[in-house]
Length: 281
Ligand SMILES: Nc1nc2c(ncn2[C@@H]2O[C@H](COP(=O)(O)OP(=O)(O)O)[C@@H](O)[C@H]2O)c(=O)[nH]1
Ligand SMILES: [Mg+2]
Ligand SMILES: [Zn+2]
Image (cartoon, rainbow, N blue to C red):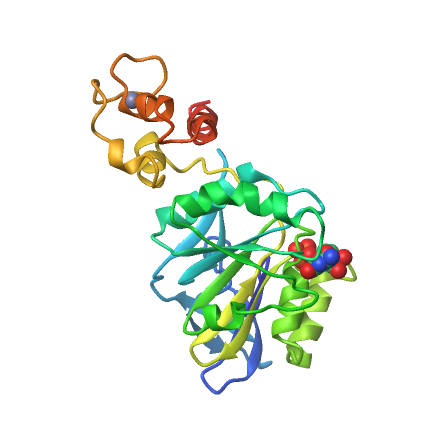
């Protein structure tokens, strides 16, 4: 239910919340994991084993992998006009979800602000790629979102300040007091969420609130991984003259031709080149 460093809160089969630790440093446990426990004499839980995962949403820099949530079945990415949101970060989250074959939902929050239409305008490109956009105001009305969460373990991702915690509060006004206390101890008085935390809607639906991030490296992805995770590139893959085409200055590049014809947005090709350059440093 909650993960912070080596401290965890685990919901047991009986529905109780148990404070747990892991045995070794090597063992990586993240929010959403299903685990096997043992109890110490003091009644504390020790995580012995992590069950195989159906998905692992993660980022990674050149040095280490940073898992964010396990077993999620969809990723909701929240953006909002104030503070300004990063289109580059949105694209990275969408790509990370595609790599795990996870459906996504883009939540355009703060619909009450006058800059909201401009946000929707920017998001129309992603809608045209097949990504779903839901427009709402977490402060006023979460609209149809609740039904979109049914039957899913949803990861709520986004930069800090977008309104993730506000949405969580609207969805879960009666959070478990014991879990809250544990969570507050982890955040140690800070106003921002510093750890991931799972909130249960019902037996088959839950949402994981993750700490906001300002960067999202995807160093574990190769050029073919990145290409395959871009739905607008897919129809043209394998059609370039050279099999190892970088879609840069090579003659007979099907991707570049699609950009010239307006079938792929220039900023998507720029995004692709940015990621590939980062990963080959
Ligand atoms: N105008 C407006 N402000 C919002 C809305 N949702 C959240 N906020 C504000 O945005 C700020 C950041 O919200 P928070 O939930 O802490 O964002 P988080 O960092 O993503 O968890 C707070 O001041 C919220 O009151 C909304 O729908 N409309
Ligand atoms: Mg927050
Ligand atoms: Zn090419």
